[in-house]
Image 1 (tube, rainbow, N blue to C red):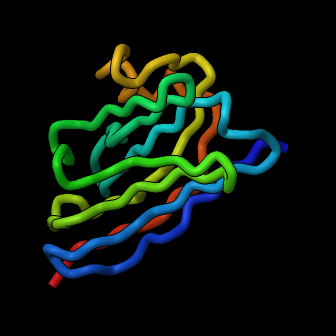
Image 2 (image 1 turned 180 degrees about the horizontal axis):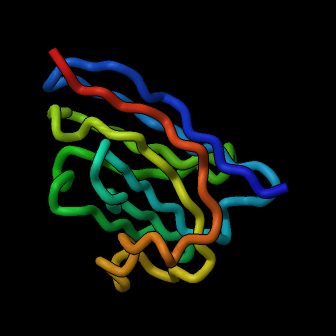
Amino acid sequence: QVQLVESGGGLVQPGGSLRLSCAASGFTLDYDAIGWFRQAPGKEREGVSCISSSDGSTYYADSVKGRFTISRDNAKNTVYLQMNNLKPEDTAVYYCAASNRITSAQAMGVITMIAGWYDYWGQGTQVTVSS
């Protein structure tokens, strides 16, 4: 059974950091691009970042560029999202998702921020940025 499980969310003060993890079971991440999305209350789900498996390239939404870093550890079948300098507007439920149709995050760019390109989703982890 294909499963993605996010962890690492929590409450953090503005300017703080969190590292989210996305662990896969039932398949290996070697062949899939992994994206992070988030959804705040009353808002649509938005793409945050993507990392592809074929070339290891990455893509970031403008809102997080320079603050968030996505990485993968294929040996652990896990993808991470390091979030620094967090802001209240980063508050949301964060989801990871897997796609075998995204070949290069860098080449496909903003397409990787479209939820419809992803086939499997985790259950989400809450991130709250507040003083």
